[in-house]
Length: 145
Image 1 (cartoon, rainbow, N blue to C red):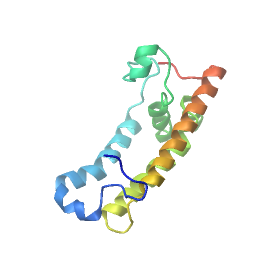
Image 2: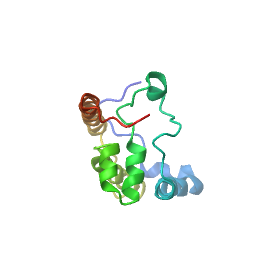
Image 3: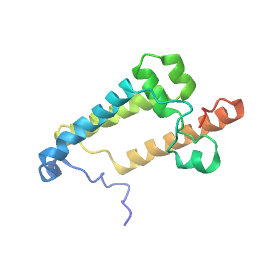
Image 4: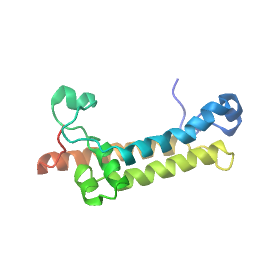
């Protein structure tokens, strides 16, 4: 069943008590744990890749390099981050805004985003990531896989 453009995304403050305290804590701690891992560990350029596109084609996908870029930002190496993926800045801003909005919805302070808004943001991101990927492919600046 498809959602209508006037409907809201399904999570709501009323659903929070049913999820359980452990899951609610994990939803806060898991992203922080991920950033902590990337702050301590530096992904290798020549290491094993889990990207299905890269493994199947031998070429970087539109998102390849983002994990290394986020790790570089967390280590204060901003020039390296730009080299790994030029969209790392906007990606991190969107990630923080989305997480804060989600936390606000869970706390009952914000309304869930409309399906139309979520779809628009996803579509714009897809177009931008594909455009940057084509530009990097033509420039020969895709990261190694």
